[in-house]
Image (cartoon, rainbow, N blue to C red; front, side):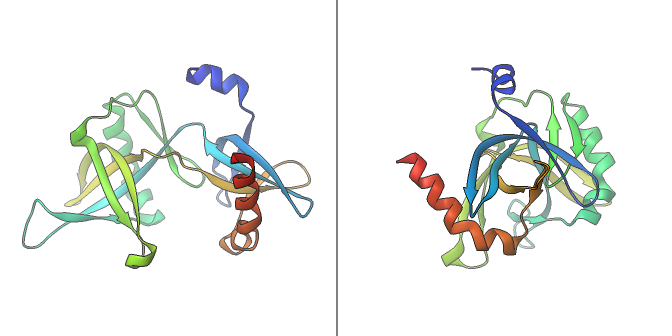
Length: 187
């Protein structure tokens, strides 16, 4: 099944953030918890993450990728968009995440980045990304990536059927029930 077939079969909803940006998402699952409908969503477009590269002081080849805040994204967005346009990709400022439209380049071994994410070793998880490009802006190097695993998140449907992203507190309150229902469906 190609992407066009998936788009015709999977229902979609448009999520809007507090800044008025929207994100079209596939509804992967619909779950009911205490008479409230929740949906598991996946963006239709390819999620994109921009990291700042912080080289190791002792070894220039080594370093870390650091998250950047929304203000920094706003500052470098035009440059990042121009860099991806060279690969026939269009960078979009959407709700929740940046996205790209267009055909991604084939994944090459040299383009894979593995990051350990978490506050301490007990919470550490591994995430893999495909590097799409890197660029400099005011002497800072940035790396544009897309996650290899799908970006999935939950939203609550309001009385009009519009999705509202869960706050961290809301998610913690219903997470066990949502996960129980998902795992029950897998068995």
